[in-house]
Image (cartoon, rainbow, N blue to C red):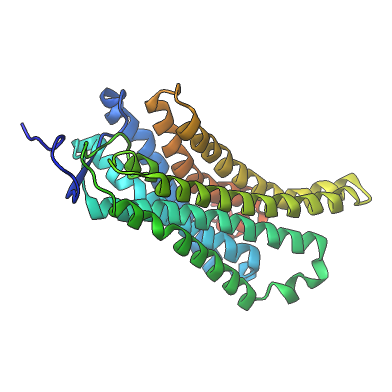
Length: 315
């Protein structure tokens, strides 16, 4: 029997991911819905990227931001699912320490990017509805590219200290991570030195990104709703609100479970570990599948373009 659980891990070579503790017997069954979700996420996001690239009428800020969201979701889901499925299928739980840090960085970095993209999409909807005559002149391709660059750089810079703070800590208790992936707090809890800096910085990043982005989104949609309710007819109000419906659905699918996971991780001591891990995986894996589906169903331009690639037999 290896003594890996009692060795000095000041420079650990590997960590052990347990998967979902308490549900080990169901790992094989759980892999089925997770595989389906991942396959649908890959297919639907690549479909969005393909449609926007092939259809010139979709070369607009809203769809450029949607492509950014699709690319982010592809990286985010791929950072988690393959290793998770290897654990479920082959019980291969080891992950190299550096690979663990890379996975941690990608997960949190692209989560921050996704939140920034939601904020950018709210800006686009605000300009399109509240200032329609100035929309195309303000949100030019160059401005959209700059916004995308700021969102990417913000995520890269804010999350960059996290793996270094984890790397510099000694690990002298265990190298077992009770999770399906290398989540920041799950790794930090294994350190045997003072982790206040890592805890506080991680909390600062989470609160900063969420508060700034959500505040901007709330202000944008407050102004949007004010304009919508001032429209003269019910039909006009419903039509205008419908253009924002997909964005609001996507935001809800992402922020609600992530907020729940964040709160239960820090304050839900009585929440079963397996339930917390299930929520933590769902909030990272479900939005990448749902985002392109919601936009595809609720956005007429995307839906019509998609149908053109699958003409009816009688056509």
